[in-house]
Length: 432
Image (tube, rainbow, N blue to C red; front, side, top):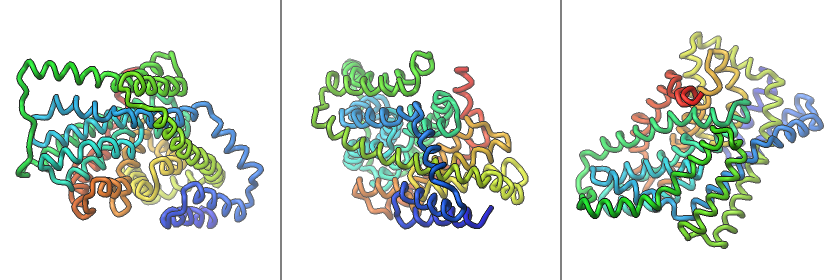
């Protein structure tokens, strides 16, 4: 690896660590390589433009807007109420309700932060009132809100599919298995974490007649939410819609549900959604543009081959190579947001893992779990700190249960997904 490229990688990491905005960090690193290696912006800019003008990427802003609409439509409360009716009578059940609600709501919005703000604001007061530990509750929801990136539709997987030149539907289905697996693992882990805690209240069993009545009432409110991912996956899988067309349909559906079914969506809220979404979309598109220029230079400098050679000198087996790749991605996930980490890791590491027999679809699941794990891994752990702040909990109280979830759920799940490819490939294979 040439000296300027090594300096560029170190420079990029340092810029991100000191808090420079991600697009600026990528662009600054690109300029350094342009001047030090003699590349021309006349070549890089048209290349980045051609890559970011891909029709598939239009799905990302549409899903972001749809997720914002759903976030402001009280859908989270209806999800929580329905799930609580089904599993609310077991000790620690509110934690399980939070996990399942995070998985469902996250799959609809595709945003971990939106999931935490909505489901967290509903569940934390309920859990505190019922005698649950604030630290454990904050740690659980901080981790569970990341399930939205593992259960389709996922904006992260749209970007991965674009980078890896794979089917969006295949990438959606690749992370479905890990997402369902981790949902169950979080529920089981939390049950054992709180089994010795005292003073925790559980919901009382309802009489059969009252239960049926409540079930029907809450089911009516729950059905519009669960139809959302069915429309998207069903439309893509059936061939009726592309990923971008399904994103447009999801936006129209979200508006109809918010305005005419839940009737909690106002034109003022829609305006706020459009403004906040425009800010997010603008940052993502600038980020995509700058990353494409930087990744093009890395490819032309043959960085993936250099990494393969370096790994080959210290790791002689597929198991060892994947272990090193995982460690690298966890560190990157700690330093960057999930979008930036995906954009940086996939172009560089995909050729590396393919050289040891890992398919792009399997690697999609490995990337998703790794990047999500980095978001809650101290010392950086942006979502853990956000969860502590939103729940008004001391970070010291959140650290221990977070480490418990990392060792009991995240790391075992990562190992399973990495070394048992069927977890990622089962649903894509099942659906052909």
